[in-house]
Length: 386
Ligand code: SOE
Image 1 (cartoon, rainbow, N blue to C red):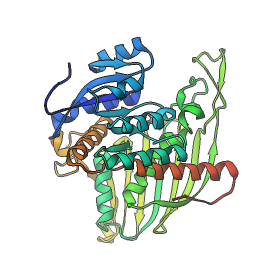
Image 2 (cartoon, rainbow, N blue to C red):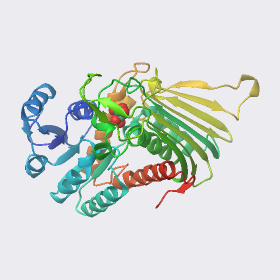
Image 3 (cartoon, rainbow, N blue to C red):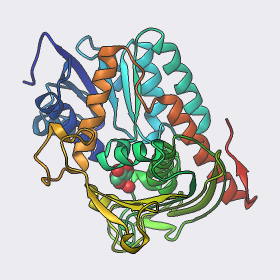
Image 4 (tube, rainbow, N blue to C red):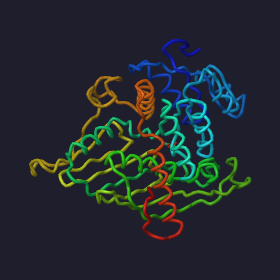
């Protein structure tokens, strides 16, 4: 049994694949490392298959299971609904959960379309008036190194920003015999690399600069159009209906120019989310595969000794780091989700709106739509709607 009773808040999580596992780790760990006003209770795990959901609940430590997310939402022991499902169910689950008076954490991207995201953002705004909090799980905002980078940019250490260079490179689909998955079907995922990992670099770059993209021009490509349904290359094949890669340029409101590359075919790159920001006085560079490090070039110093220097983001004064280990004992991917639920629980307790909220998720959805429009119509520059 997870901790029950006073000073706790019940979580009902829908979905128990990769995101379900890492969110569970966050809910289980947060109150052991951070001072949270309400300790999460792993009340209910939702999944479509009863036996598989029971097995996942036993392994991950959830108290009960439901095979219908509507029943999960209706339960009195659930105050937070955590949505870890493919994008095609985000809207229905989130709007129903908000209507039922729950707080909602929803995985990214917020939805599979701008229209869905608009409905969700409107429902979240209405529910906020009722004290209900909602957040989109753009977890990379909670990488300590990126929180430091954002502060350095906000403090003017780079001066006016000229260039934003970002790539999110994975290679898990490079083999054409890798079987079909929900992330490869448009009706379930909304888009491919663009929404799955491109959404992260869109949100992360806007987070770092503190401003939005105003327009984009894009290319998208599907390299492998058919994949084995169950991994047998000689078996039945199914159609891939999403992009395998998206490349786009963009312009920020301040005039800064940006380049984006999102692909799951960069053979050898496993989860390499790379960002470089060039300003008039300096530059910052980051690669998630070395997530505890930030490279900084100070253009205001002595030219003779100038160069990118490595900042190890493991000091107790760095965001979130003080809750974990002594300097140099690095943290990982899963810690960013613990940071995320720490901030979410704090907002719930303080009655403040979480960031990124559904309105932020809607704005990212609008950038995704502009990229897709530019790439599919070949219309070149497409403004990001507001
Ligand atoms: C697959 O590309 C994936 O699991 C994404 O869906 C996650 O958002 C990312 O953090 C890791 O890769």
